[in-house]
Amino acid sequence: MDLQSAIQETQCALNLVLNNKFSEALDLLKPWWRDSMYHALGYSSILVMQAAMTFEHRDIQMAMATIKEALHTCQRFRKKNSVVGSLSGLINRQSNLQEEEMHAELCYAECLLQKATLTFVQDENMISFIKGGIKIRSSYLIYKDCHNVLNAANDTDSQSDLHRQFEGGVKLGVGSFNLMLSLLPQRILRLLEFIGFSGNREFGLSQLREGTCGSTLRSILCTLTLLFYHTYVSLVLGSGEGNVAEAEALLEPYLLKYPKGAIIQFYSARLAALRGHFEKACLGYQECVSSQQEWKQIHHLCYWELMWTHTYQQDWPQAYRYAQLLCRESRWSKAIYVYQKAAILSMMSEEDVKKTGEDVVELFRCGKPTCWLSTIVGSSPARRPFLCFCACRQVEGLKQRLAGKSIPTEKFAVRKSRRYKAGLVPVPLVLPALEMMYVWSGFTMVAKRADCSEALLVTIEAAEEQLRHDPQPSEFHVDDTCLVQMLKGLCLKHAGRLLQAELCFTHVLSSENRIRYDHYLVPFTLYELALLYRQQGDDAKAAAFMENAKSNYKDYSMESRLHFRIHAALGSLKSSPAATP
Picture 1 (cartoon, one colour):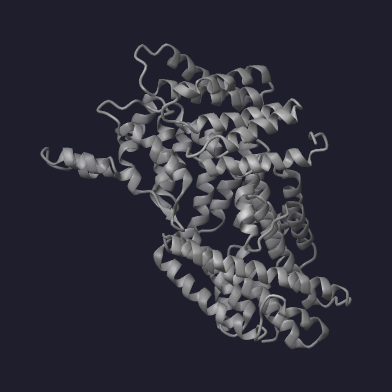
Picture 2 (cartoon, rainbow, N blue to C red):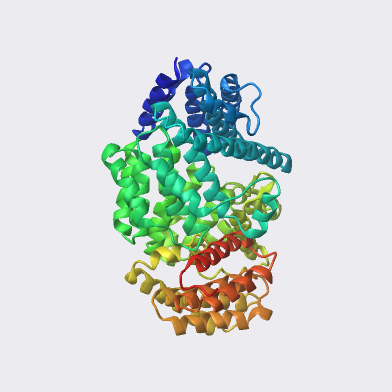
């Protein structure tokens, strides 16, 4: 099959994926995937995506075997002595072989990235992290080389369709690398620069925006990358300043082209939620679930978002329903799902909790919804103490490792759950669902709705009053009070009541020496106070507080997440025209 036909057929397969016809896409690509670089790339991409969504060992093994074969297929078309800089000589020859070599470099680089992703998921050790890092570096260098070739080739006025397809692939790779690397905190980026990495956010965004234009194979992939950045990355790892208007404009033509496509419907619902249109978002996620039944894992994405969308509205029974579905069906992060379900139950009335048949304390302790009922209740009285001790270790047992590292949010959930194992009479967590909502940047979304923000403030002030009149304060009392003050400060800040918010944040900082367990509260409060000062126009004070949080605190929960947010916020301060020189 010639190169042009291969690209066209892979485009057809991509259209099938976007129309929820996943099996048909695989069937279309399978006959040629060992002979065509684009068929190999497309076939392996679908299997890698499936493996990442299911987390099933069998799917991961199948995807890894496929991606290795795809790399061999791409390698056959590459220039034999291909090293960094070797492609520059290709621009003087205009044969089909030259074009095949150039496209082979792109396909090989994309396959390397997929293999690196699977390597991180497949093995839970540092060796896999190193192997994956080497593959990512090789892919990055290939993209840099292709970008140099593209710049030189553009001078020759080559405007063939194959050239445009190559250009689209380069913009996708170079743009994505620059954008993602620019998110890394400076201390990490300085280390990466020693081995040749560099990232420029504006350049990355511009490359991706240019890549969305036209009708190349990778146009939609550039669009999806920008959508993911604006709707998730900038919110969770940034300062919450994703460009929602740009994301809506990018998505609009694909809503017309793929009106029933699950991926497109999902992003449409996500954008509605970011606008504060929670009811519309819920309907969108439900339509996404009903649009296809082949890949159930897309349902799990929707369940996760539905859980949070109902949480923003404090519709706890519905939020519990979707948390329960995630616990039962999804393999992504059992520790988070079980903790989240217990956190939601702790926000519900006693009557609603009884309807679920759950025991909140035991759920926090055990970490498995069936553990307590099936092993402890069903055991003999003599064995129950031993089984209870084992059950108390289950939350930690659900924790996963990715590339040899524990997942920060799972570690956070485990640390909070240990409070229920501290003694015979556990001290309940205070507002655990709202605390996790903050971890996932949910307060930024709730701020779009004055009614939801006010309702949250009422809930937080009720917890504040209860702590104030607690007749027997526990060892966690100061930590709980500081958590409530930080959450209250967030609500007040988003409501524009900045002086009251500042008082709440200052209360947390003044209690620093008395906090015993939740040490993350102080650096995160410094960050929120810095954002408040930026909102008031005092950029110098905002930068000073962020630097304080970044430099003077370490070894606390969610440290890396805060460093990402500080890096993004400092970057926006420097790029602001009003920023202090």
